[in-house]
Length: 425
Ligand code: GDP
Ligand code: IMO
Ligand code: MG
Image (cartoon, rainbow, N blue to C red):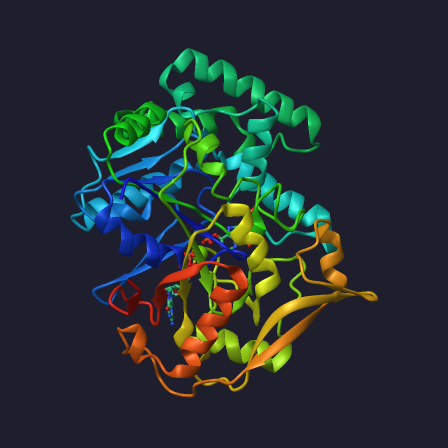
């Protein structure tokens, strides 16, 4: 299988980490192409929990090549910590982790500005992860970023850093006294980082393209989710990168090709962390119950996730936008005590019925969900490993999703462990 793309179809946290981990055993190379340490991809391996923020999830499999491509924003401290963590675990990273020299760095001042700007937005805050993602991508677009290649030459780095900090301090008042904006503090951090990381910096576009031409199996690991895409998501309540399948070509620096499989990861219900419209959100006790059943707390920030019913309108949009041809439906086990189950099949917007996701996403906050109800199966399914052994009502729920989205489910996840997966052949 030469190329597979895994993307989240909702607002992130669909269970991409579990699916990437599962499929990375068939891959030669696993590539992250966007986002940064705002991601939290969880893998449960032999009863142990691993959460990957910056490293591709494939790093857990000792023999696999892993790439952090140019579209990722790299937080030096986080990268060093994650590498050290795996080296301490006896999982060696050296010689198989390749980081693009074109990738931009997330600096201490980006993390400061992330929190500072959120404070200024007050009622309009986005609810970011505070990982400096927005300010780092802002600097990239403004041509004020520092890339990994820049840290290799000390004189060039010092000159660049001085000018970047000068512009920042001239544009925002009262930053002079803050450590995050101090020239020597930032320079020392980058010098330490350079010594630890210089052996990992590569032309990753070349590496990926050679692997592709050689027929190697490449797995592209999307982070966040379709509805968080900066252009096509629920803007401004999005992240700052292109989270959709199309983003991989820009993020990796590759000419467009048709991937063999584009796998859309869909949680069997909806969640969202942070602010922004969420038509099927369950408020109060109902939301709390689903949050508890699904253990829905952020893998990066620990924040409680907002929870609600499955939204087929939004999912149909995501499937089309990504060109999803296969679905991985996760967390089906979480719905086992519900009867009936609800699926959103349309929105009521003022006096109109919408069957398609509105192009103007500012309408979403005034959209009321129109639900179809289906009977629940009311029994435990986390021990089931064959599709035909799932209760008929669970299969009917899955079929309804497939029918509505026009894509077939290839993987059904019924628990967080690797083996709690049903593969449909
Ligand atoms: P990601 O960001 O898309 O990788 O998802 P997260 O790791 O942030 O969140 C998914 C959570 O659900 C993690 O805690 C997983 O261990 C867990 N999980 C994944 N698949 C299943 C499943 O099928 N059932 C249950 N109960 N938990 C799952
Ligand atoms: P994974 O890869 C869920 C959300 C934040 C916030 C918005 C902007 O684990 O699915 P940012 O820090 O990116 O500027 O925050 O995006 N967000 C995520 N939500 N899962 C993620 O990643 C997310 N990454 C960012 O909560 O609403
Ligand atoms: Mg996550």
